[in-house]
Image 1 (cartoon, rainbow, N blue to C red):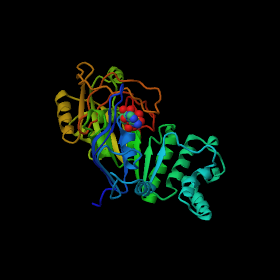
Image 2 (image 1 turned 45 degrees about the vertical axis):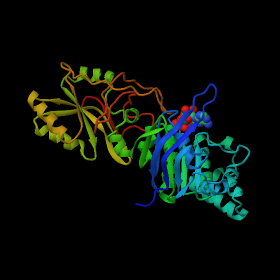
Image 3 (image 1 turned 90 degrees about the horizontal axis):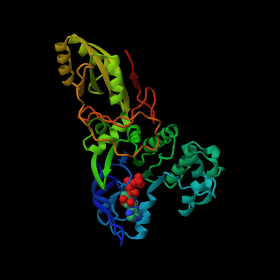
Amino acid sequence: MSEPIISFRDAAKVFPGGRRRPEVRAVDGVTLDIETGEIFGVIGYSGAGKSTLVRLINALERTTSGAVVVGGVDLTGLGESRLREVRAGIGMIFQQFNLLSSRTVAGNVAYPLEVAKWPRGEREARVRELLDFVGIADKADAYPSQLSGGQKQRVGIARALATNPRILLADEATSALDPETTREVLRLLQRVNRELGITVVIITHEMDVVRYCCDRVAVMEHGHVVETGGAYEIFSNPQAPVTRRFVATSLRDRPSDETLARLRERHPGRLVVVGIDEVTGSTRAISQVLRDQGVEPSIVYGGITEVADRPYGSLTFELTGPDDAVAAAIARLREVTGVDDLGTAARPAVAPAVAEPAVVEPAVVEPVETTPGGSPGRPGMPGTSGPQRRPGGGPFGGPTGFVEGDH
Ligand SMILES: Nc1ncnc2c1ncn2[C@@H]1O[C@H](COP(=O)(O)OP(=O)(O)OP(=O)(O)O)[C@@H](O)[C@H]1O
């Protein structure tokens, strides 16, 4: 494998305390590689250290110990002029866009080219090309105040790309945007990655952003990276409690305690939650396994969505048939996927307690039904708790097949 484009080596950033303030270990012993050409997510709750970590990449903050290596260059102890060269290869976009209000859209995009002393003709051609790429060529003469949030972020992206960076850092770039606009901007970041070959680092507190467009992700808590992995692996097999909480807020495919109580009123049979993923295969295959055991399955709840372009989620089945056949069917299913047995209305299984999600809401949240408890995630079967996605929708595009009903 080629050398990582960004490498943190036991990197730490400690903000010194004062008379009344304790010191803050904002980034604490992070070792992490980001590979060339990937979309890498850094997720964590507020104060986890995400922004500080990313600001170490372009040396807006300097490490207090350890090292950060960008494009093979160790930033530790580098002088300002060498740092400027490294920074020239890194673009950045922000939650609040940071556009110059006195300049037009074209003027904003031209700004870094003026700083880099591009000749006027080349500048103008480059600005046109960039505005075309981000889809707002018709707004070249507008001022930022005349633009929507999504349009402003497109300008931000065009400006960040102006000098042909190899890396684009996106610090909560979609957190101020509505769900639809968020998707559009993330699609644009995917194009930046795929068409221009730029490595994109996305900081976010929304697992939906990771689900939608990241190849790999690092989960941060208290300045540490507590988990790293492919987006699909992190969703399908979260390890750290904080990761499980993030996954639960994104998928919401399992019935909450309240929903389960309603389901039990309508469905007296044995309820089981069955994990669905690429390996499990289709719903039809699962139904066939159940029927082979002499059990009649009906889907009563669930959601299947895409994580990193691969299917993922769970379905809640009501299984009807002789008790021993149902038990055999559950055992057979457990050979191929995660299964949570919720018992029957008459003999409900007690769901093990799960840690509640931290009280940090995603920025885009619609009214939700909250879940007081749930069952913890486990391999192949993410836990549930927190907001409950309503059928057919959600804070950021619902699962592709979401059901609650009497099938
Ligand atoms: N310049 C600074 N001086 C002192 N403390 C700081 C400074 N910058 C950040 N911190 C502290 O470092 C910790 C991590 O902050 P950081 O902004 O990196 O977290 P974050 O995960 O990006 O959170 P948020 O999403 O709220 O921005 C916080 O406790 C924060 O208060």
